[in-house]
Image (cartoon, rainbow, N blue to C red):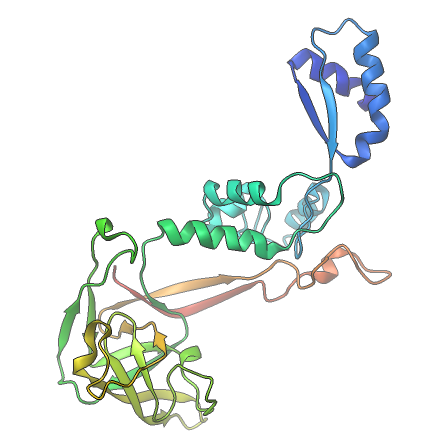
Length: 303
């Protein structure tokens, strides 16, 4: 009955091109027979193309519904879900989705599109439109030992580095700062260009600092870093001796920041093709248990 209703509803609704997935190709002779032999008000044509398959995702509505009903996600608009409401909630703009569909095109052959292609389209779009600000999601405190207590120097970096017409924002350089724990390492790897003991790094939109002392708590975790700043390096200037500082890291003022909860969304599935499962298991066995990480103590710019 579905095969009978399909051509009739298309013809009655004035459909000109009925786009189907490849499994409907075998049904097309009957579709055409109905259109040719019944008094339909229009003559649509059926065209078949391969359905969209992406790595690290399932796009079957039946399987997505199963995850929603079993509360494996928070709902249809969960930011990890491959739904328009989920993608919108994650902050992806329609322009990125349109760019993605143009880039992958339409094909007859079954294929698996890399999720990285979609991510690249999102980055390209956000790079053009997103206003800049800094956040430290796993903070380590930095004490600038050669800066006077109570100093609060106002800096005015651009809201967008390529669009001066968007104006500037205010950030503050103070004696106590936060940097992200991923931007500090005690491992003296020569290829690590961020902060390390005795090493230098540039604070984005501010000064070059050098780490002089690492303070740890009784468990051995890094509690704070004591650093000195070079006052001649503001605005991207080199230190007085002219040597180049390679690393640039983000930061926030400890006294002028806001506490925030940050949710880090990863890929919903932990394997490239979630549909491939061991015998006796189903696609849910491939769910990524770390697809959502909630951090309660992030620090963000007031801007």
